[in-house]
Length: 77
Image 1 (spheres, rainbow, N blue to C red):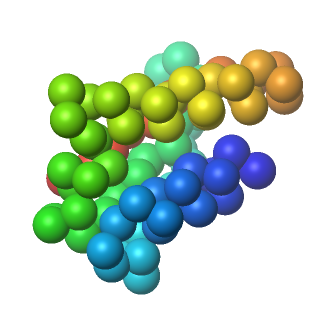
Image 2: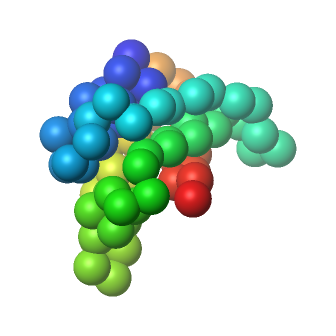
């Protein structure tokens, strides 16, 4: 569910929604969602001063508290 939510939000933000991919991996402190977008869309996903990235992490945190898991979000270059 969290993976689909982040993918939906990211596709809504970028110019090239076909290049958006979200993969789930296991990190040191729990599950990690890795968000990959087209090179020209990285700024749109991060936002000015990282505000959009922070908002994505806040939404992810709110949904993961419901399930009892703590997901982390990485935005890949």
